[in-house]
Length: 299
Image (tube, rainbow, N blue to C red):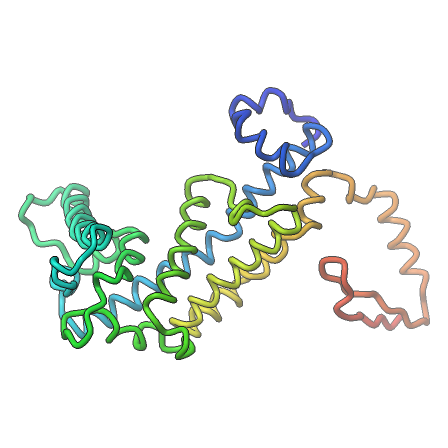
């Protein structure tokens, strides 16, 4: 990284964007500045798999329950509150729902070169609509008590079976999804996500990132314990924890400073080999903290 032409890169990253990093991280020189920028990229990349787990789980959880309750093409027949009872914002949510469904149908027909009136499979539409379509469904306009064609509140428990009862309300879930959507949109549009919530310090930014990780995983868990297990066992959470740390940021700000010369590696290996007929232990550390010991038996 030190051999790169940092000045030559700035016009292609853009000075206004880099100035955001200069003012917040106070880097010493261009190498540290680029390290902060690359760290931001790694943070976004680390969150992508977990966000995808959330999006896919949410989409399929709603579709599964809505299909069973409302029938095929449920999104065409979902009940909303009467127009006379809707505020302007709620009416916009209803209009947006219809618009996104129609846009998905049109895009699929165009992609598959179908005639304008051709029937489009339900599953194709479900897969085509955006994340914003699913979060829009939690608008109060779709909350119609005792209506057999309404999503909420009837489907809250089936869609979120593991949510605590006190949290299994449309308002609570909508608030969490809106927060995640804002974070997700920044990540997918290549905007810095470390400044979510306007952190004051770098450590504050780290804390907020890890809080967001916990929030996403919480909503996934509310829908599916299996999806939560997938995110954990696939290493998505471990990767976020590693990247969203002061240690990893410092590593990228100072490339090469943590590398050991090959001569030193050889010396240390030779020293270990000379410890014959002795017991020794090696500390196992994670993020600078000891988490265990490894016992060596030398013969």
